[in-house]
Image 1 (cartoon, rainbow, N blue to C red):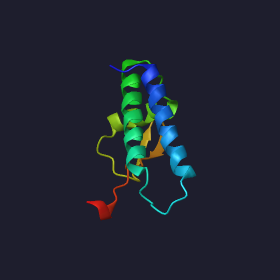
Image 2: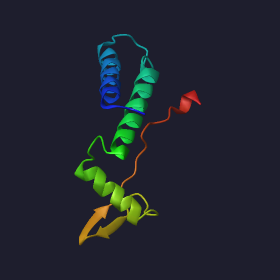
Image 3: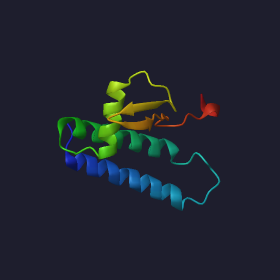
Image 4: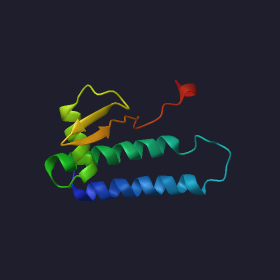
Amino acid sequence: MYTLEDYEKSRAELTLWNERWDNYTGNNPDKYQTDIRDAARKAREIKQYLEDVGLLERSYKEKLERELNRIFPNAQSKEIVEHNGKKYRRRYWPLEKADPGKQ
């Protein structure tokens, strides 16, 4: 479905939108935010697919998080779990923040 080329393109697009936001001098705090959010979603989706099919290697941290999620599916945020003789504090956070004024 996706290729490494697609992933590089999606990262480049995200970088482009972030640079546009960084260089924006107007007073509209929402300028480019939809484009940035969409580009970030697309990059995450492609990366996840490539990792799932084995074209991209997951980092040690990503592998550990997946293992802890598998072993402790009901762990609450900030709960301490033990795995292989080590203790880990499970932390969860949203991929995106909702804008309460836009709902």
